[in-house]
Length: 160
Image 1 (cartoon, rainbow, N blue to C red):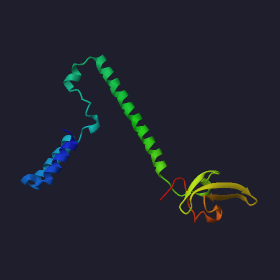
Image 2: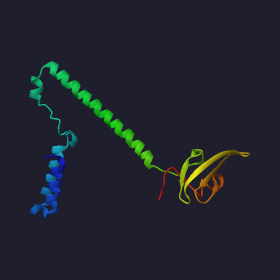
Image 3: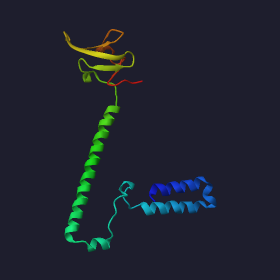
Image 4: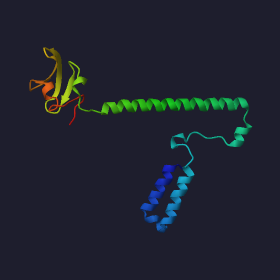
């Protein structure tokens, strides 16, 4: 039986009215569950059976050395897996983030979402006054971004 099963059983007992148990008894059971599982690995490592001290003492040095190498390899693999998950989480968060874009973030010829007009194509060109930014909407023509970026915010992805 693992921690989740014990906690669920305790919740079921509480839900059923404690089966005439005093509240203090339920609190003691909750503390016992906490103490029992406090210094253990996560539930995902149920398959790992730690050798007892007697078993470890009876092993040869060569076997212990191999065992330590396996543990170190597994630790390294776990660290690498964690790093991969964290890297993916950052990429995913970046994909989910969709703040309004600043004028300098826009790229020529890219499509951006505007709440007012839908998908718009940017057209960045050199004007006599310097760089100029315009965007072309599908149905409403061309707008000057320098004048209207605050009014028409652009995003990388569609927003609702």
